Length: 197
Image (cartoon, rainbow, N blue to C red):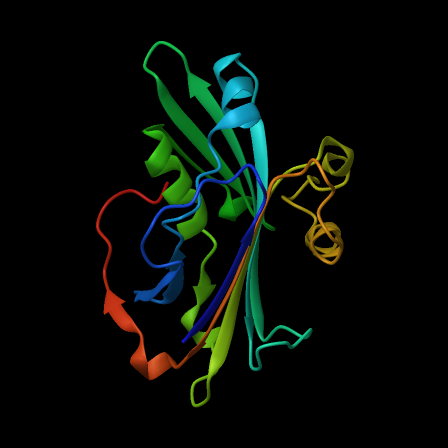
């Protein structure tokens, strides 16, 4: 299984697998143990009382270099920090109002894990009888892009797809991971207990 992991200079790496993939009920979920986006300037801003936003995309393709996804999940994650409890809150905003979820009282690691795991693809959208590849693209939201991402019903998917279609700006932290091939029949099936928000 090939993995290519590229990240901004701001990201911190650790040893271990680059990506773990599993079936959680009706959803494919990924975990990125090496991603640490709550440090440096984003963490300083949170501790100063500001909210910080990240945007993420999980893409499923049927060949390693395909530009046409078979499925994708897009979301915007707004994080805040409670200076008294020293805990994080995360709000996930999806395409429709019903996809909005909030979770609080999280450690930094739990907040990061929750964001990545909430880029989930429905099992029915995955190729049933052939290999597929996954790409996670997770970025700090550039304030220049914020206008037009959030609309009345939720996030503007067209606008997010446009943003992910271009390279990240030089000051914009980004974590990009390509991994595969996978087969639906080979994925570990687990039921995760605990809050999803």
